[in-house]
Length: 181
Image (cartoon, rainbow, N blue to C red; front, top):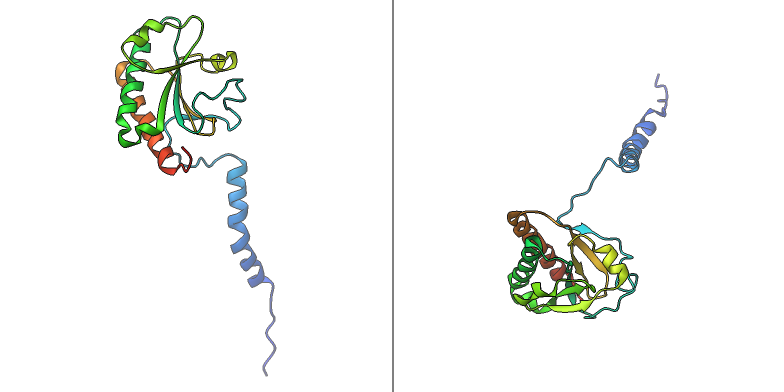
């Protein structure tokens, strides 16, 4: 005769495994730092706490995007290339260039004679800002005064040009997504 079918636990276990296995695998991958998400930025992101206020400096252009560069005491060929790249990067922004201001930060011993070829806005840097920008770095600052992205020193004119293109690319993305400034 017809015997009643035994309902086993096997289908239930398989069903649970189908749903739990991907979650467990994802947790393991993320906890072991095996996944590195894709990033389109070319500069180095700074921590969100880094701002004008945290570096004991007043924002010279509040509510506006800025590119900062600390002028060294001896402006050699690398420094002059940096200034040229900053000027050309600003021009390359096209119609968005009025939203971005290039600021040259000065110390007591900055080589101001290097600025004769270019007209940049200058501002006195605080001690904390000088310590952060010690190696001819360029930094993007958002309209809220947070230092967002840094571009370290590179050698060679070709590398400088590529870095300038990277700066413009990152700035365009930020300007496109920004609702402030």
